[in-house]
Image (tube, rainbow, N blue to C red; front, side, top):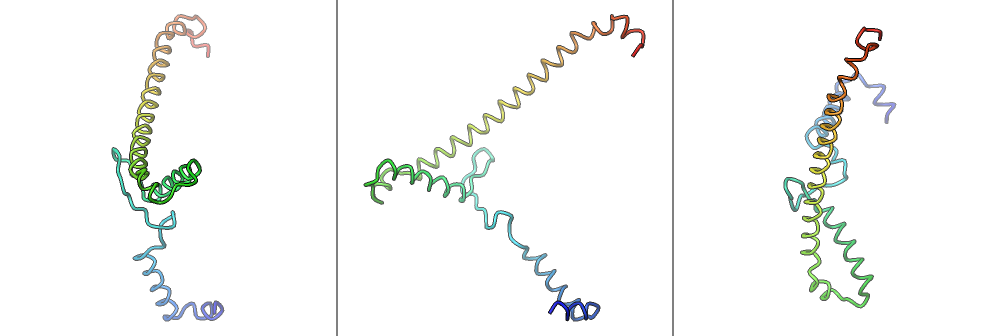
Length: 137
């Protein structure tokens, strides 16, 4: 088949077929990099929480609960309101991550300011030194 396409590469039929294939990929695309749709179910201060993240965390939480309570049935799981607890935990986690980013930025700014102040306060050492002041460097 490829030999046939190569032999007729300059024909209009091959060019039209490839044009159609290209248009299909342009308009429909090839899918996302994650392999599926990413549906945001919750937004915390602009940070999205996707359905995939929620499902993964819920399965982990359910496994932990079942390990602690092996005799627990579906009604018992529902009574524990795991989904509501997980939603609250995800909200808390995202707020903590936002706070952590904010604190890290603040720390970097304080370190930068401190280093700048040390450089300013020691500048007179370099300007008053004979060796540096006379252009020997």
